[in-house]
Each structure stands twice: as C-alpha cells, then as structure tokens.
Length: 280
Length: 118
Image (cartoon, rainbow over all chains, first blue to last red; front, side, top):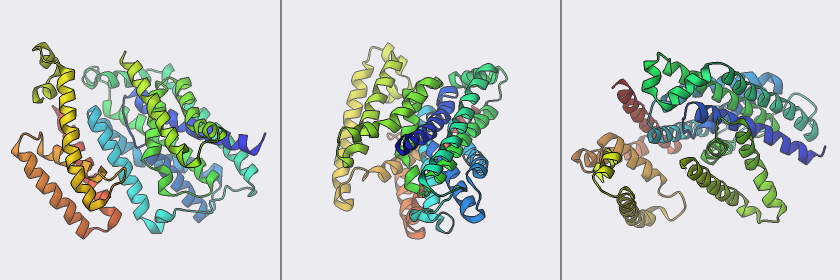
C-alpha cells in the first residue's frame, strides 16, 4: 500500500465519520445545521492540548476529544433544534462562528490564528507509521458511527426521533421526550465529530481555526443532504466525493488555485440536484 | 407579499400567483441590496464576503424589530447599529464578531423558546 493510498484512506475514514455525524442530526431530527465543524474543532484542540501538555498518545485522546465536543456542542445543538428551519440555519451559523471566534481569541490556550503545531501521536515519528495508526483509529471510529446507525434502527429511538422531525407537537402528544432526544442526538453527533477531530489533529500534526471554518461545515452538511441521510451508504458515498473530487481534479492537471473553488462549485450543483429531486 | 409570508396556501387559494410574487420580492431585494452594496464598497472595498457582516446586522434587526413594514423595525436598525459600533469601540477585533453572533444566537433562542411554549 502506497503512502498516498494510506493518506486517502485516513481522509476517507475521517470524512466518513464526520458525514455520518451530520447524518444523525439531519436524517433523524431534520436539523439543518452548519456547526458540525465546530465539534470537529473542539475534538481536535482537546486532543492537541492533551498531547502537548500531558504527552497523551493518539488512542488516549480520542475519548476525551469526543466527550469534550459532545458536552460543549450538544447544548448548542439543542438550542438550534428548537427553532424553525430558517432559524436553525442562522442559529447554527452563529454557533459555528462563536466557536471559531473563541479559538482565534483564546490565544494563550489555542495559539490563536497561528494554531497548534508539533502534535505527536505516541509512536515512531514517520509519516507511514503515523498514517497507519491514524487509519486504524479512524476506521474504528467509522465502525462505531455505523454501529450507532444500526443500533438506532433496531430500537425505537430512531422512530421516535423521526416522529419529532416530522412534527414536534405530535411527538409531544405521544409523550416523547423532545428535549431529551435533541440532547442525546446532538451529543452523539458532536462526539463522533469530536473523535474525528482528535484523529485529524494527530494525523496532520498542526491545527488552526481556519481548518474548521464555515466551508467545512457546509461541506459536511452537504454530504448529509446529497447522501439522503439517514441512508448510510449514500452519506459515505457523498463523503468519498468530498475527499476524492480534489484528487480527480489534480490528476486532470487543473490549476491548484481553482481546485478548491471547482470542488465547491461541483458540490453546489450536486446540492441543487439533490434538493430538486427531493422536492419531486 | 406580507400575505404570502403569513400564509402561502391562503394566498394561492385567493387566486394570486405565489411564484410571480416571490420573483418580484426577490428582484426588489436584489435591487435594494445592490444599491446598498455600492455605498459599502466605497468604505470596505470589493471582495466576495464584503456584505456578510451587514447581512448579520440585518438579521439581528429583523429578529428584534419584526417585519420591515413596522416602525419597530427601524428603531431596531438604529439600536443594532449603535450596539455594533459600541462593541467595536469596547471590544478588540474578533471579540466583536463573537459578541454580535452571540447576541443573535440568544435572540433566536429566546424567540424559539417562546414559540415552543405556545
């Protein structure tokens, strides 16, 4: 296996987990949120800080990263979920910008715009061993995320969440705990994204607030919409598109300066097609 | 347009064209925004996200003051502008953005809470 294939494997697994985390919110609770990159960021910064200050390795930072993201972001998701559809997007946008603003401003802790560098993973410092370790952890996280979907489908929880998605009033009249469902789903989604952030920090060795900006959140939301969440295969296919589209453009010899814009344009077209086909 | 915003089904049942009214509304919004963009560009220069902070101020105004055909909307516009400028004086750089979006999030949460209780 080449280093390049390993690199793609890590990115595919990380983006797969991120897309599935968004799929929980959008697919089961119908929340159109653009703040999933903030949970990703909190997981990444938690892992980076634990590694730099306490020397904690990759495996040990995954759970704290996931928990920190789950605890800090689920409250925000609960707030976002209470609003109407249009309010949800704006509230979620606010949450995303507030978290990134805090990461930029809390310079003594987060390094501000300079970010945090020299994040180790607890093993031999070669690119290949790091990539193999991160791929293993990312696949484990992906397995956990897919298992969460399977578990939800086998229990009544997913049905209850979908009732809340379709009509909050009806769900309340059935005695369903709407606030509790939103908190649980928000926590699970943020924890998966936080876990992905922890692996990402160890893999890239350097993180900065710009890595977790609004374009990333929009891309994560797009994977859930294009992949028709909660359809796991569709979500994973859309996540693969996010990772592989720039690689395909690069292989075609496209100017590196326009590759990012081209990816966004392609995503925009796919989103419009997904929304139009859903409307029918 | 106000009637369409309040109840699209009733609007349609009265024989009005929803699509046509929406297109007219969007054209008016775009034209007004273009005019305001001309004056903003003089101050900030032209770049793709130049109008973003102003759109957020507009959202805040709408949330506080309600629809634009009420006097409260214009009073809210003055209040939001004063709040934004005061934040710019008191708070350094990026904290202003955090304060602005924090205020917007609180307002949305308050409104959503009220609507849920109804």
